[in-house]
Amino acid sequence: MEGIGNIIAGHQLVLIVVLLVAVFVVYFIFKKLMSCLILSLLILLSIGAYFYFSGSIHSPADLWRSFQQTRQKTQHFVEEGKDAYQKGKNLVDRGKKLTEDADRFLDRSEQAP
Image 1 (cartoon, rainbow, N blue to C red):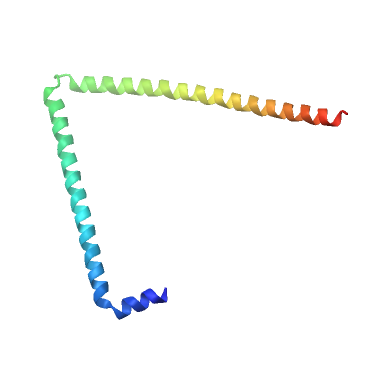
Image 2 (cartoon, rainbow, N blue to C red):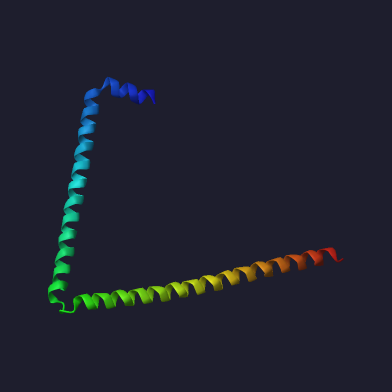
């Protein structure tokens, strides 16, 4: 660790060059990232504008109906998930009980002779 400190203290020009290169790399990465972000935002806005202008007058009612359908389907899937979880839990409990019974049976059979 002291070796790195000595190198930095002894070669300050190298440190400055390395820092400048790092700053340029970070700058170009963020520049590319920001351009991708702006392009994605423009695409999303254009898609939204297309659906807004091509939609019918009853868009808020359609939106509310879609929201209600999504909510009902989500509740249905949550209930199915709870049922599946309960079935899995029951299977695990039965498996544990079966394993314990088998262990007891094997212990008895070893002690019997």
